[in-house]
Length: 632
Ligand code: WT7
Image 1 (cartoon, rainbow, N blue to C red):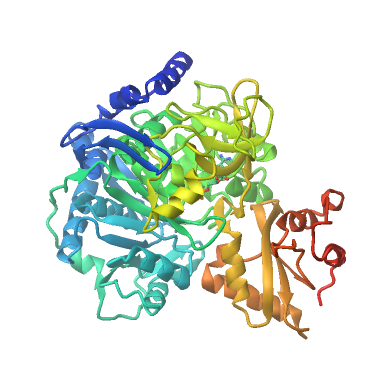
Image 2 (cartoon, helix red, strand yellow):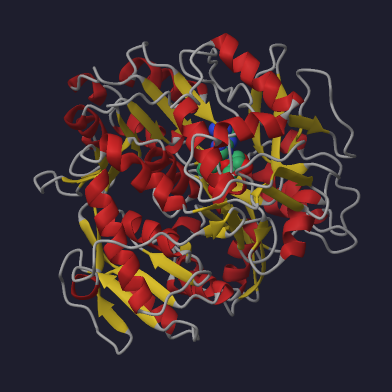
C-alpha cells in the first residue's frame, strides 16, 4: 500500500499537507480502501456542537476492508496467529480466507439470533481467536460491539450492558490465565440477575470445557456457529454508522461509552498502524494488549487486519509458566514488531533483569510502548535487553477517545528520545493551553494538551448522552478537543506527556476514575466518606491510595481493610483495588465542601514541604492529623 511513509522528507511533506489541506490529504489515503460508494464530503469540522463527520455519504463495510479485499492477493497468508496459555498446547492460525469463513459463519449465527444492523452486542471474553471473529462478525452485519474487559466484575458488566441496551452477550465458559482457571460465564450469569432485561441470548464459546450452569437463554458457540454457511454478504454501512462502543472511566460519574464510527476509524487505524510500526509484508506483529481495551481493538485486531498483516494474539500472562514467556514467544514466532506497556516491562525487569539474555530477539525491528509515560530506566532496559540497541523504541501516546495513535516517533524515520512520545502524526494538530485556555507557544512550558482540528479516528459521541461528550471533551477549551493530559514541547517540537490532570488514575496503563472507587468504598456501612488519589508506584506507574473516614471505632481495622478491597472488587473489579488504605479522622475540605485532593496527593507522596497554602481549608487541622496517622 502506498500510504506508508518511508523517509523523513515524506513525513515532513505529509505533515505539512495534512495541515494545509486536511481534506485532500485524507481523501488521498482513503482512496486505497474498498468503498461501495464514495463520499460526498471529506470532513465536517464542527468541534463546538460537536458534530464531526468524515467521508460523509460514503457506503462501505468495515470487514470487507479487513478481510475480503486481501483475499485475492494474500488469501492464504496468516491473518491471526494465536499462542495459547499453555506452552505445549497447539498454536492456532487463521489465513485471511479461513478468518473470513469463520467471521461469516459467526455473522450468520448472529443473524439467526435476530441481531440486526444497529443492535448492540456485549462481549465478556478472554484472549481467544473467537473474540476477534465475533467482533468482525458484528461489523459484517452492522451490529455494534461493546467489548467489556473480562477482569471487570458482574456489577460493572451489568452497568455497561444496561447502558448500551445490548441484545446479546458473547462470552466463554472459563478463562485460562496463567495457572488459574477463571469463571467467565458465572460472572455473566450474575450480571444478568441484575436487571439486564434487554439481553435475549448468551452465546458461549467452550474454552476449557469445565462445567457451567446452563439457562434458557444460553447457546453454545460450537452448536450454533459451526453449522452456519461460510458466506455472508457484508451489510452496506454509512461512513458515520457506529462501529463499536468502548466504555472508559472519566473523572466523574459512571464510565462513558465512547463511540467510534466506521469509515474514519478504519482509515485512521490502518494509516497509523502501517506508519507507526512500519509493518512490511511477511512481518509478524505482536501487541500484548487485552482486547478489552482500545489498544486491543485498534492495534491487536483492526489496524493489523486492515493492513493485511499477521497479528499475534497471546492468551496468557507474561509470568507463566515462567518470567521468560514473553521473550520465548518473540523468538518462537519471530516477532518483528512488539508493542507492550511500560508496566509489563517494569514488572519483568523487577523479577528478571537478565532473563532476556537467554533469548535471541534477532527478528525484532520495532519496539512499541503505550498506556502511560515510559520511565527512562524501563526505556533503557527495553532498548538494550530486547532491542539490543538496534530497534527504535516508539512511545505512542493516544487514548480510547482518539481511536488511534496521535503522537509517536516513526521508527527509522524520525528520531526517538527517552520519555518523549515525540512528534504528532500527520493530521494531528496538538496545542498546549494554560488553565484559561490561552495557547502556549513557548517551548519547555507545561500545558494542557488539546487537539485543534478533527482527525478521522476521533470519538463522535458518548453513547446515549451527547451532552456528556460535549462537556467532557469539547466545552473546556472552545474549538479544541481536550485530552485531560498535561504535556510539554521541546525546542525540536517533540512532545513529552506528563500525565492526567483530572481525577483519573493510570494504574498499569488502565484508567480508573477516582469517583468510581470512592462510590464503591462508600457503599460500606461503616464508612462515612472517602477520597481516592493516585500516587507513584514502582511497577504500576500509579497506585491507588484511599483515605477513608469511618463512622465509629472498629476493633479490627485489618478486616475492615479487607472488606473495602472486597467491595471495590465487587463493584468494579480487582484492578481498582486500593494499594494503600489510610483511615482518617476527617478529610481536608474547602468551605464549599470540596475535598482538597492536591493536599492528599502531597501527603501520599510524603512531599510535606509542598503541601502549600492550607488557609482556605475549613479544617486545616486535618492535614496534621493525616500526616500523623490519626484516624478517629
Ligand atoms: C491515557 C489514555 C491509548 C491506549 C492505552 C490507554 C495515558 C497513553 C501514553 C504514553 C504517556 C500515555 C494518558 C492518556 N497514556 N499512552 N505513551 N505516554 N501517557 O488508553 O485507557 O484511554 O488512557 O493513558 O494519560 O490520557 P486509555
